[in-house]
Image 1 (cartoon, one colour):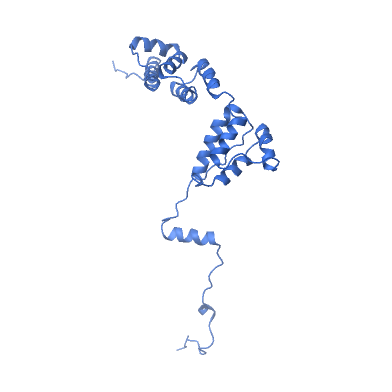
Image 2: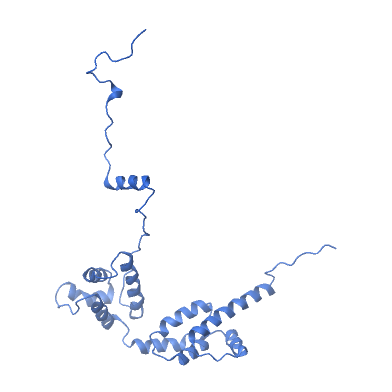
Length: 229
C-alpha cells in the first residue's frame, strides 16, 4: 500500500501554507464588523442635503435661515460651532448678499458679530425685510386661497401672520376673507363666531374635505350596485 504522508516533515506541501489576511481598508473592516454584529451601533443616518445658496432676496432670508437650522441640527452643529456655522453660511452667499459679505471675507472691514446669533441679526439688517412687520401685513391683506387647498393656504397664511403683530380677531378676519366663497358661505351657515385663527383653519380644512367627498359622490365616484331583474 502506498503511503500518502510527506516523507520530509520539514518540507511543507502547497496546501499547508497558512492563509494570508487580505489587505482591507478601514471602511471595509467596519462594514464586515457591522455585518457580523447585525449592524448594532452602526446604523446609518440619512444623508443631509446641502443647503441652497442665498442671493439676497429679502423675502426669502427667513426660509433660508430655517433651512440652515435644520442642516446644522442634522450634522450635529445645533449648539456651539458658531464659527463653523458662520463660515458655512458665508460660503453659500451669492449676488447682493455676497457683495455685502465680501468686505468682511477679504478683511477690509472688522466683523461686527461674535457668534452665530449676532451674525444672523446682522444678515437680517443688511439683506432681510426692511420693514418686516409692514411687509408681512401687506402680504396678509391681499392673500387669497385661490386654487390652493385649505391646508396649503393656512400653512402659508400662518407663516406670514407670525410676523404681523396683529391680534387674533384681526388675523381671523383676514383668514376668512381669503377663503373661497363656498367656505365663507358655509361659515356663515354654521353660525360660529370664533376669533381663533387655528380653530377657523381646522374648521375650514374639515369642511373642505367633506365638500370634496360630497362632490365626488355626486359625480359618480361611488359605484352603485347593480340589481338583477
